[in-house]
Length: 170
Image 1 (tube, rainbow, N blue to C red):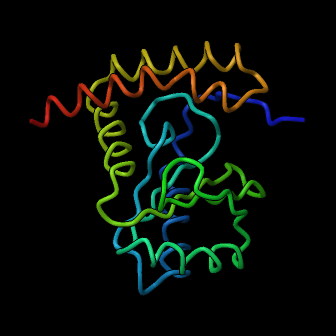
Image 2 (image 1 turned 180 degrees about the vertical axis):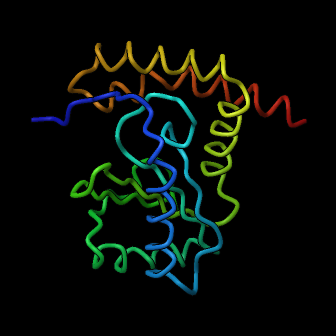
């Protein structure tokens, strides 16, 4: 059976959990980590989210990403492949609460840049964050056992926010 799409109230422990995850990753990949960023809804104060800490781990090159993959697996992270974009590899750890989804990204990758724009825009714009939260709750009901459908249904909103954030940056 598919995993249920569950949206829960914001937990003020999420940022602290992110810091613990970041420390673990720095210890796993001490020579290659350039930056570790808390992304996704759990990175937005007061925003309801799936109880899953999303993390972008920036490494120097795509080759460093590939070299880090077996290290992540050996540490108990479930490989999820490069589902979203070439050169970015995802890993999950569901055995902990909240769960973890980590993305290994080469420096300068557009997907990472877009995630940061989205996160930062929501942090700076409470009304946009509230609109996103309402959308997420609605879609979690519509796609209760369809995580891919849930994610796809958010895409237009996410892309519009990123476009707006890019315009503000220019």
